Image (cartoon, rainbow, N blue to C red; front, side, top):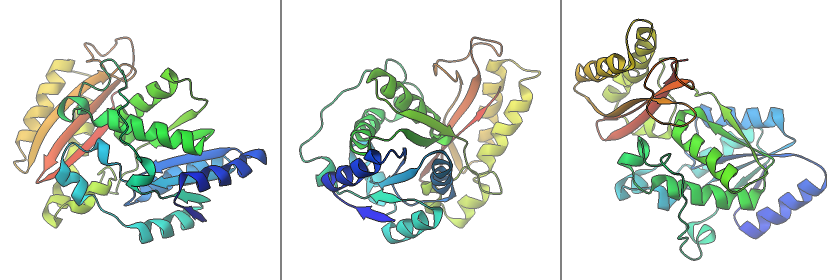
Length: 280
C-alpha cells in the first residue's frame, strides 16, 4: 500500500492509475478505523480496480473544540488495518496541506443541513461538504463508498455531487454493528466500560419502534421512543425523528411519498452517539 501526504503526489500517482484504464474507488475517513471502515474498503475492492482511502481529521466540521481535541488519532494502527483490508493507497494530509488558506465556501442544501444534526451542529455539514469536495477533486474517484450510519451526511454528500455535477457514483453501504447491535463508531472508544455496556439500548429501542409501526401512528411511535429513553437516566436524548428517507422532511404517515427512516442522537455520558433504522 502506498502512503502519500501531499496533494501533488496523490494526483500524480492516481493520474497514472487512471491512464491505465483502471477504475478508482475511494473511502474518505477521519481515522480511528473500525470494522465499518474496513468493510467499505473491502466493498470498494470488489467494485473497482484500485482503492484509495484518506485519513484526515477535518477541523472545520467540529462545532465543539473539545470534540476535535479528543478525536482519536491512531495513524500507525490505521495504516496497518488498511493494508490488511487490501487498500492500495492512503492519503494522509496535514491541515496546512488541505487548507493553505481558509475555505469560505458556503453550500446551499436547502433544509437538508438544517434539520436533525444540522439543528444541533450548525455549520457542521458545510464543513463536511467543503472537505469532501476537496477530497473528490484530489482523488477524482469513479465511485465513493460511504456508510449509512451517518445517513444525513450521506444524503447531503449525494446532493453535493448532484449540485456540482461531479462524475462520481456514491455507493451507500449498510451500517456495520457490534454483536450486541451498537453501531460501530470511532466515538465508541470514548465510552467507559459501564457506558459501553448500556450503549446497545439505542439500537434495541429503534428495533422495538419499527415493530410498533404496525399498530401506532408516527406521532405515537415518536412519543414512545422518548418515553423509553427516559427509562435510562445515563442517556440524554437530543432528538428522535421519523423522516422521509429521500427528503429528510418529517414523515406524516407511514404510507407517504417515500420510505421512512428513524434517526436518533443521544449523549451517553459525554459521548454523543447517532444511529438510524429503516422503518420500510
